[in-house]
Structure formats: C-alpha cells, structure tokens
Image 1 (cartoon, rainbow, N blue to C red):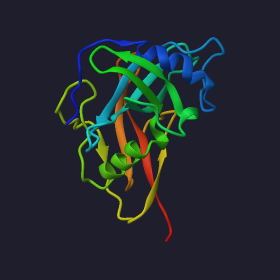
Image 2: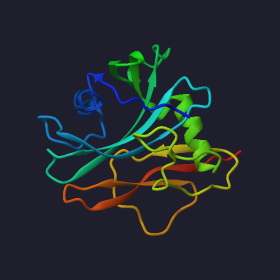
Image 3: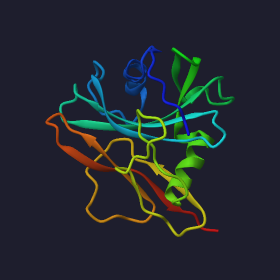
Length: 191
C-alpha cells in the first residue's frame, strides 16, 4: 500500500495545475486562467511501490459555469524517458525529495492499474489516507479481454445506469452538492 505523507510539496499540485491546465486543448476556462479547488479523487497503488498514482478532480471556480476536470497524475523519482510532453512539472516533496509529476493518461503504470480496477482486481484507495479503501469509487467490470481506456477530462453528471467498464466517482460543486461523474471507461478492442 502507498504511504500518504502529511508534508509539503513545493510548488503545490494546485499551483502546478493552474499553470498546466490552460495549455490543454480540453480546457474550457477563461483566458486569465483557472482558480482551482481540489474537490474529489482517489489513488491506486503501484504494485512495485515506485510510482505514485492519483486521480484528482479539480473544480475551476473562475469559469463562467461550474467546470470540473479529471487530472490523472503519476509521481516519479526520476524523469520518465520519452514523456517530456506529458510533464505537468516538478516539485520538492518534504520527505521524498524531487518528484516528476506527469499527466498519467499515458503512463503505463497508471493505465495498467486502472485496467486492474476495471477488471475488479484492485481497490480504489482514499486520496489523502494511507491503506484506506475508497468505497465511493465504483468500477463496473467489463467482459472484454482486451480494451483501451478513455479518460473523461471535463466531467458531467453520470447517467443513473452503470455501463460495463465505467469508473465513476463523486466531486463537490460550489454549493456543496455531490455530483457523480464518469471518470474513465473501457473501450473493448477487436482481436
């Protein structure tokens, strides 16, 4: 199980995302940039214990309409070869030292563990507590032996019916209302 340290990260994740998010083609905010709040998410464990895996939901309070984004991130102790275009930034962790923080949608460790969640073989973990399952994250198993994973970047309320292969989770609107959204979905691949 991953250990969640109660320590500093300089710059903070929200500071890094405030600079990174407006450069993404799916960003829907204002030209002046976002005003971000962390409003949901979860973690997965790397079985090798080397890569931190976090799915953070951030809400842009500067947007004209309430907008929440899913940002899957990986934390590494060294640069990931060939992944410069996916680097969110680097930060100094108060216990672990310098961390390279990546958009995890193409990080092989994150994708493999999310596939294991969709298959029902691993549990989502609490975002801010060590060794604590997060029962609010739901993954509906898929029967397909092979699948790709599509990430929802701009979150919308999820339909009431669960679809095989979907991962859903809650996030909090400015008025305190909890909204459940599809975070990722398996897309079966043909053999």
